[in-house]
Image (cartoon, rainbow, N blue to C red; front, side, top):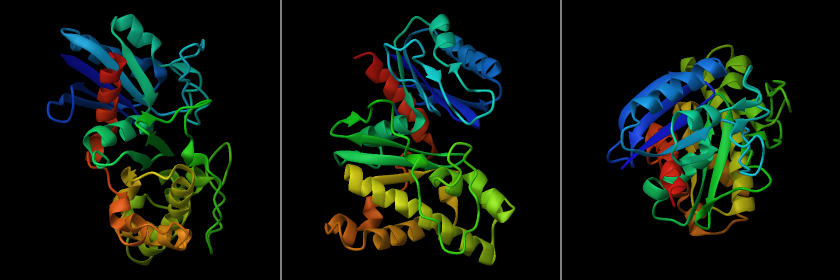
Length: 294
């Protein structure tokens, strides 16, 4: 049995074949360019693995239309990524291979993979957050991914401005929402250099500001969804000291109100890195493919 997984990110596409973390092969990465070129390269990858292919899974940046009854099911909708508004992502794949296709957001896919094989495999619920080019969150609660009118858009939560932070925000829709204040491009615009290039006092200050915004999200998810684990991934989380600062600021945000030992005594087990590392999104797509067959 073979599944093809497609992690469609705003910056890059990652494709792989297999059934899970133990047999993931032929992992291929290429940049997200125009919709035509990008979907064409994805279709080429699928064609190369057509022999024995049983299902495809797509975990995509969004927003996306997840309503099977909708005329735009499988489309990327009102994305801030230039040129990708109203892009049919699944149509070219349907034309390439007549197999079931599982489709969800990249972060919902990652949450599913972490629940199945990763950092949340021993608990019953989790929220997965990625902080990179954008900020997104997916939820796996009560044995199912969170869906509703659309899908969770945790990255666009309103946030309180941090002290001494006068940056206006980069989100074209909301300005100073969480993504607008704390995604990778916001860090670069605020500090004049990429996150990974920050050092010394500028790094210390950037980590403090970033942790303050992300902690507001962590507290909100704790209050709203009560997950057993919060998983933070994405390139920005590689900033030195950020994960520890996020844990400390989340404790401050909650201020003792959620009085359970998993938080009060073991915050390092509550807010964690992805157990699947950088493969969480791709393995989420593989998991979506497997579930599309059921």
